[in-house]
Image (cartoon, rainbow, N blue to C red; front, side, top):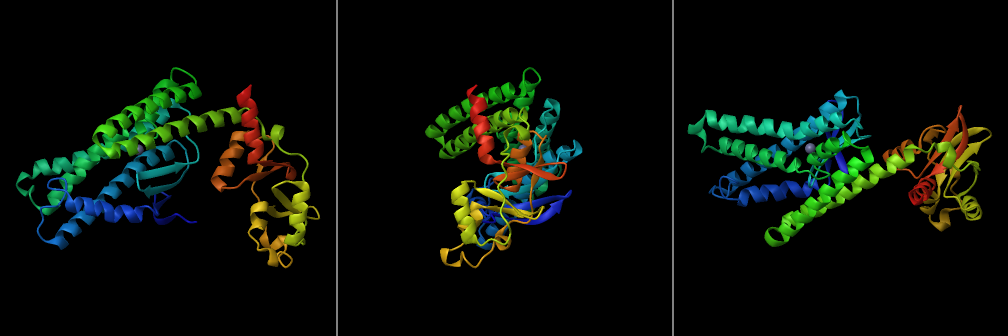
Amino acid sequence: MKTSVQIARVMGIPIKLHITFLLVLPLFAFIFASNPAPYGFGDTTSAITKYILSLVTTILLFTCILLHELGHSYLAKKYGFKIDSITLLLFGGVASMEEMPRDPSMEAKMAIAGPAVSFSIAAVCLGTIALFPSFSATAPMRIIWLIGYINIILAVFNLLPAFPMDGGRVLRAFYAKRMSYVKATQHAAYVGKMFAFIMGMFGLLFNVWLVMIAFFVYIGASEEERSTQISFTLEKVPVRKIMTREIVSVPPSWTIEEIILFMFQKKHMGYPVIEGNDLKGIITFTDVHKVPPQERANIRVSDLMTPEVISINADADSSEALKLMTIKKIGRLLVTENGSVVGILSRTDLMRTLMFLGEQ
Ligand code: ZN
């Protein structure tokens, strides 16, 4: 299911709205409309004015979140990293990058860039208020004050030393200058989890929202720790060493009925489709599984296969393979060497390798 839609492109980066955003917009507008001054417009007598002001504030708020993410992205691009997209969702914004920098000072600067943007917006907003004190009660000035105030919260919150907050990345960079990257991630994740724990306890006593955020931080810290561990383990292993060499291919002319029987015999989940010596595509169990039994005799492999074949070089390291599978959302890659297919690598191969290396 498509969960987000692209609304714009900035600096060549697609900006997307996540489906949860549809909920957020009216929810935040409602919160601003019910909050008392100066945190909202609850005191405004005209209902229409109240909701218009609240909606404008909400849209500006998310524009600020976007600018925060663009702050990270700007530096990332400057350092040569590729940003796939920025998605605005329930908890704010997420810039999705193909890889994270391993250079601690680069990572720290990129992490700081977001909160720096938020602080700058706050400074401009609150500076404007200070310059024109006699207008401070007007509707535009109230919006400006509120945006300034929220940006300070946004910056401070993001600087909390816990993954997936920016502060967690700064902390890892701090440790990474003193120890290995994996160790540094473990240390930073530990601090993040402790932080989440304390925040959660505090939240149980005072504010349920804090419990939710604590939970989110805890998951983020664990996830970051795990994915760093995985990519470091796989980096040492070339694809060639763990790929399946026996390539079982199928011809494009087969019917789905035929290929299902074949799959039960061979017990692989994905097969290259080859005609003569040409690679035509790839077909997986998931593809054929979708076809209803009564239609299986009429549909051919060539109708159902994925013609875009994603392959990786046999000498590439396995963490590259995992990254590629994750980005393309696929379960297997064809392994090539000098233009010809020499093997197939599945997620199962990668997981088996991780289990094996993890036990050593
Ligand atoms: Zn950030």
